[in-house]
Image (cartoon, rainbow, N blue to C red; front, side, top):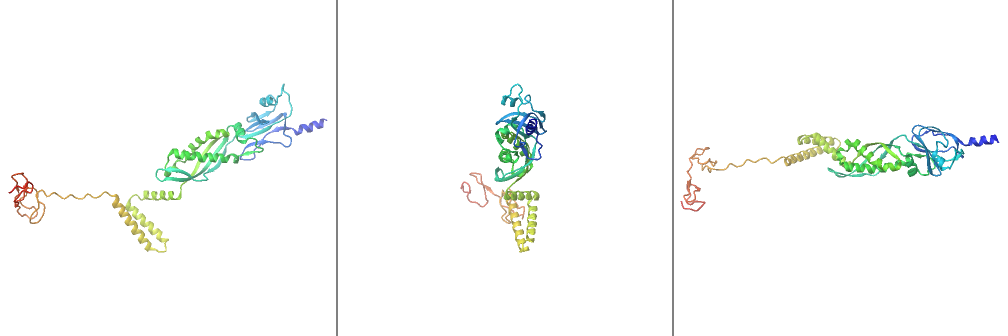
Length: 351
């Protein structure tokens, strides 16, 4: 009889612990074998970075933080109440034991499966792709078991929640780029700010899952090829600086391309000529129109001999020295008239 009791007692669980041999297990459901009954006085070991939760018939019971425990009704108040134990009655019992990993899970990849649209002030509507890494940890084990894991039979890993976090990340990043109004040319200089904004926007959504982001990194935001080509051209123009240097740059580019062109220098001449013509036309179009000298008013008329303008009241031409006829004045209106005029051209008075 004594041997039988020893055999029965040996089948009951007396040491409960979890030594995590993986790097991606979030929740581990403890199981020893066919008989998972736990006897009073069993030893429970919870290591740093872990939390142990006892579940009785689907109801969350007692929670144990890191440490070593001897299971008694005194340190299992909730389970004792659920089992209706009174007066410290000790009896083997059956309960599900879950170990929750509370350490950080780092270097998880995220990325946009489809392009995300953004409105840029310079390029209009632009499709972008992005990728990076994120880190998270469990902050609310009870919510994780109730709302996410449920009645999962085995271990629960990072891959079981990774998809949901990625979808949240892409949505939050799209909002971050839209609200920040950062031009496409300046996105690369603002990865850190966009990552912080995305993480702060994501954490309230993840509270219901019982987890929290601890890191969010944007490694790259890529633009369509045509936008990148336009950016390269603009950068080249910025390096060139002025149109004369741009003409030289175009000529150098044409020579370089001709080296790979079977048509040789013929194609080079055409390209150089076209580049020069375009540069000259652009220069003329962008420069202000040259001020044309205004014709000097002929206040004194023109010399009858050489045709040069005369100063007002001049009696001799300053160019050829010819004597000039003295103009008269109309007695009716006072208008200046030529010496040979018979009528005033202003009022018609006979002279």
